[in-house]
Length: 528
Image (cartoon, rainbow, N blue to C red; front, side, top):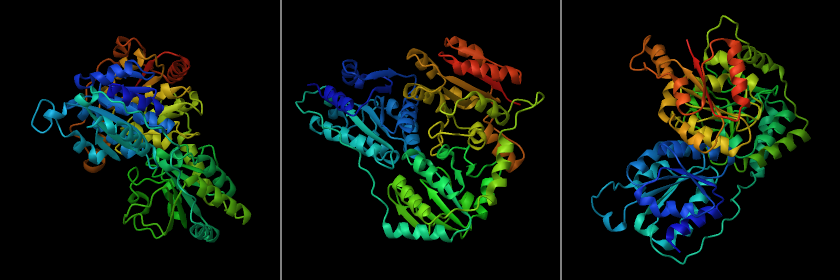
């Protein structure tokens, strides 16, 4: 068969349903092999958008999706989204075209060392320079991308190799490698620490959500009464309806979670990821006992030097700890953090008054009211991300998707496409005017493939988060101001509904109508 046909058959065996990308001359054979397969190729408007789609797909499903770019600028355009997935610990396989092998030893048109460029932003990457290595390389790309901790991998496919003939057959996928149980002696020491503590606290990170450990975490918390503060990417690890939830770590607008950490005499970090959240923000100079429960050892970090590390399957460790605590009938006093939780809830659930202007913070209670617990909110990066992380109660895992590893702007609109394809829930893509115009052209992709999600667009004519930080440092801002098009007219030009509510009642009605509709829509919220 054609070698590109072999690669596509390998992708089919890996369970790939969609390939997102931009076509190119050097990927011609691969594109026509995709046409003749069970995989749907979805042309997008920018390669970065393709990588963001696969990032969100990986976050929601745990399975590696595929993004495609051609050589040169196609590959470099993919890089931001690939790096974002790698730092978000989202499984992703990127495929890029390349010129023929006969011209890569010399300077030639659009030829760059893409494998070298992708080296620092992937878990593994290689050039497919021989038909006989296709099957092993594709299998390795998916195995490495999906193995805990997941991330990005990359395959470069030269055009002459893609067009060559081969009689190789695909390599069968196998069950994913699972991490082992925790060491029994270490588990006993963790149990002893817990039994001696008066005010233990859990910090739940991305790994608690990603590894399907949420059920075990919730059982552990219900059994012991230990409070939980989540990172931005750990939102939903326990329900914010739980009396043990202190919502979000380092809560900016409200410092109750930070106050609880200072009061705690034992910290259990569960799936905590330093790339997402600097521990210096909550542990600078602290001498509190820290127990690290994760799939990998803790990074060597002055502000994060755990007393004990359980490197194992997180879910298994929590199940065994729950059994031990249940048998010892250890139950912690919940009164020490109850007032802190009450203050947080009072702050974030207050309905706005009729005279209040629209702000992200005051809009979020309205958004939460119209969204079901299983609906998915995808946040772009900017000042609105901080408010969503801190003030949007989340009840189920993977229902509030925040990129906080690389934290690149522009993820929410393309991410909404992946979420809409991957889930039956309603999807809201929240973004600011800065991030929206980076990948807003993917609305055309969304309408073409029949998506029906809601874009919630906060407009302040500014790179607001940078402005906030400059004001905090200098009392003024510079270089952050923007001008914008008429967004509702822009939405309508894409063939979708555009709304610009002016009053609170109108906002709630518009959001409710948009969420219940099967069509795409954009709701512009002008901020003061």
